[in-house]
Length: 576
Image 1 (cartoon, rainbow, N blue to C red):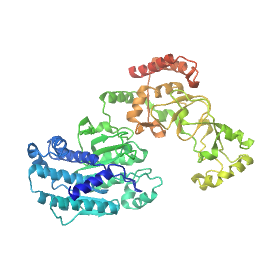
Image 2 (spheres, one colour):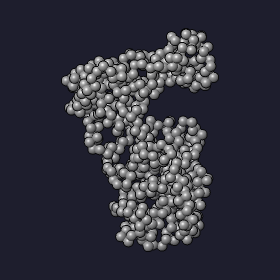
Image 3 (cartoon, rainbow, N blue to C red):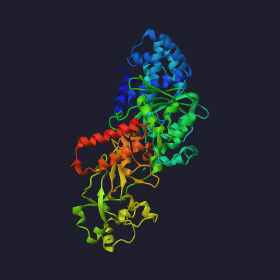
Image 4 (spheres, rainbow, N blue to C red):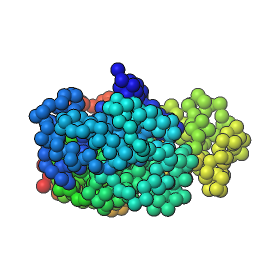
């Protein structure tokens, strides 16, 4: 075994499991690197230069390590196109992506029976560029490259590898690249200001920063700046930027300056075994494209979409494979009376600032001063929310301390938490007294008729509640307005329907398999318009459903309830 093969296998083995350091870096497994190289080269060549099919050469030849003369004609054409293409990885780590690219070019040279020494020397000296902030990773990459050179008996005069922050330092002056590839570090801004602030202080950061963004967004912007007008960029990242609130400017930028060309979504699959990341691979181009192609994990085309279909009215980006699903979604869009956020009020639950200080069991509450009882209200969890109904009973109690006129004995009891509670931002700014809830909200939100919904759930769990229901910030509340078109009972039927589950799954926001049901996606839900006959029937159904005994689903015929709910789906599906 050559030294290069040994090192390659060693580092491929190390990167086949998640290696995460303080920078949020997750190194790329080789199989993912191979998928990315295929998508990048195939897209770049097919969209810009020629229409030949890379699949047989790459999947049936290179991945199987089989050099066949039947590939020679295509190999010659491809080699002539990419042997002088400049490729850059702005966060190259130990180099798995660029090494995979180099190995494929070597494979082409062998297929073509070309001069390996000359082509590979020129490639490494003039076309391969890598940058990483981790000095150790760059040293590993150099060690592996040197071993590779020895294995093919060449001695390049230079390596274009740099240790530094590619978002701050300019290594290239006016140099632009045909291909950019990367698996940028995933770092949220919260608790990571030491990473964001140096970027925010630069002209580059001031130009592209947006609140609640992820660090890897900067790499998309930097990639655009360094990419040739006809170039292609391929990244592996979390898919959350397609719908995240903190990526609004990024999505707008991509729509205006880039075009999605390829897309693969890995959903809940653990592409990094030791880290949960809802990963995707995408190719972006600076030039317009006629078709966005979705691929599966086996390099096969799954769906071709018009670029106009992926950009939604609310700015989100959605890739929908099924024509039937797209048709039903269009049916809802075209028949909406308005958006939920315009027709109803949407509120978030309570932020305590410290559950230990404000939330108690009934037994624990009995140990508090008796004066505290006047402030105690039943406190519910998001798990208490079911489809249509919510649990009525809870053993938890919340000290609803929302103003300054609190009994002195209660304040005295709360002093054990004063040090922690006083550090809250709202207290230091004088917005709240140290002994009150951080964000108590208006108590009217929790009283009277309302719908409640958990912030995250696998299904569309909306419950109708007419009594008090105090809950934390992971619960959202929907209350009626003067101009609300339907009763909250009818609205609850609609939001629990299969049609709205499909809408939220494909057009809402998701975190893997979980629906995100906080204010932004809730407000964006389109409310279907019904004629008087359908609306009258929906009102009748709602009265029957919510007149059932709701506690633990006892006291009614479940088959009758199921029949009523199925009828709601039929009304939605058959409306004109």
